[in-house]
Length: 245
Image (cartoon, rainbow, N blue to C red; front, side, top):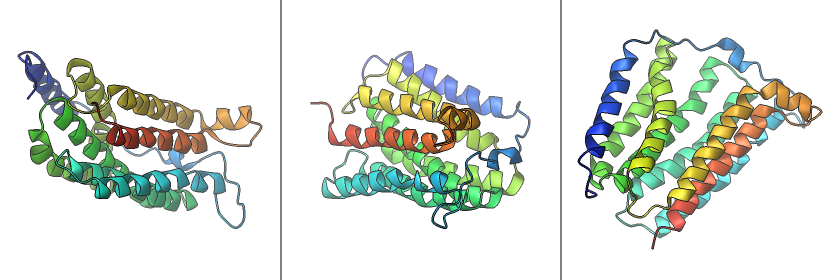
């Protein structure tokens, strides 16, 4: 474990515990069904909602490249977490494409499942590098199982609270960790770029219609969201390929 963590470790524990306690004070969050009403519904070459489907292709390329690199450079530095992270990126391409062909709560499950696993694998990687390598052994499997459970819980109970924790609190926790700890091998700049592009992807997702109108109905905010999120995953690849020296 890094030295001089007398205040960092307790602070991190308090933040996590507070987030868990806060869960019980938040009312169940049902899925807003209007979420499925994307502005760009063009059918091109027989592909329904074509641009929202094909804009997921970059995830496929990043996922394959990342897995290939991990398997050919296998080492003790969170290799299993990295492999699962890039597998989840690859599966996002399939799951999100499947969802956008016919948007509904049922198909959305297959979009969110690999994303939730990916968020948790990334969290395990960052905690292992910035806090203590032991977290790879202790937290990797439990965190991935939590990601899976968060989606299944939403699917069965129409309650997004746990999934929201997996997606948004894990992102907040990453920002806190890289702010107060020093990395062992990761280049923080790449992680910051990944977070920035992901945040921008969520912004364009929110302004789906506005972006579609501003681009004269050439591309929607949600399609751009996929491209920006895919760029975010490219920085995961750079983190792995270019460690600190």
